[in-house]
Length: 378
Image 1 (cartoon, helix red, strand yellow):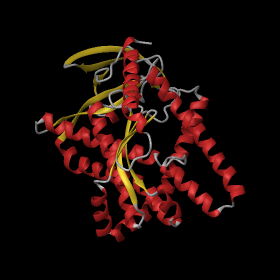
Image 2 (tube, one colour):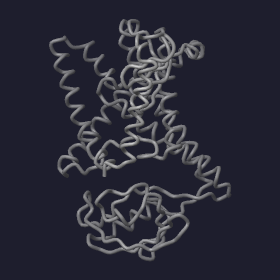
Image 3 (cartoon, one colour):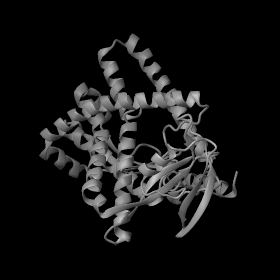
Image 4 (cartoon, helix red, strand yellow):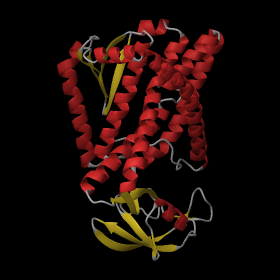
């Protein structure tokens, strides 16, 4: 274990020890203020409840229709996510735990630091605000809103009155649960539209950026994260599509020469390809390719950061919004499925079915997370 990792772990442990020492003795639930319980810190406030109330009251009919669409999207997304995780889990089993599954979202480690933090902030705000507005539009009272920190993972929440929501009709509960992911997917689509209609015309591709290197692959130790591939064997590479087309012409064992930009320096590197794990007979380099772009009109310091900010808002909202529909409590998808099962099936059938669903969901999630943890730990 590296000294840096030990220092980080010690810092995290010291932070939580201090938090518990200062605030842990006041662990009884409070309507407002900071509460610390173990490795969970929650800050509650009522200050935003008036804003949510006015927004819900003014457009109540719209928010109810919005919530109904969220129900349909929720169950559709639940089936889609379950299918995709099942499909990837089977690949993980057959390939000895190397197939890519769920990717960990850690700003500065698995995603860019500042773009990732901005994207996550947008995810949390629109998700929880949507929960709260739809709840109030359906007459379900809110106790508070706030921020939460679980170990090192930040979050936000809107806290409905638990007794009131448990007594609400099924349709109202499903509206509230589905509203969060609905907001994330709508936000992702808006970001995508802005990128395609307003930002993309200002940009032009200038190569393929190495977003990551697969450990143990041919590129491992040769290419670095952040490198930009601009040519292969004398062929100019400007887009991810041109890179993929070239790689589809290669064979295992073939040696290719890449022209790479690294820290404003151009260099040539040679790599001997292996066989692609998904496409037998094709060459495999072992990188996560991403499009590299530059501005057509100048102003690189404004245009490029705006593009990547919107890009990560899109990626994180679509990814986390869909993942939140996975049928596993406490995710919203799990709550939706759980409430439907309890509503329409007798307890003697509902209970074992819920336990079976939880078991299968946890198993699939574990199989999908395995490659992500392996890549993170190297």
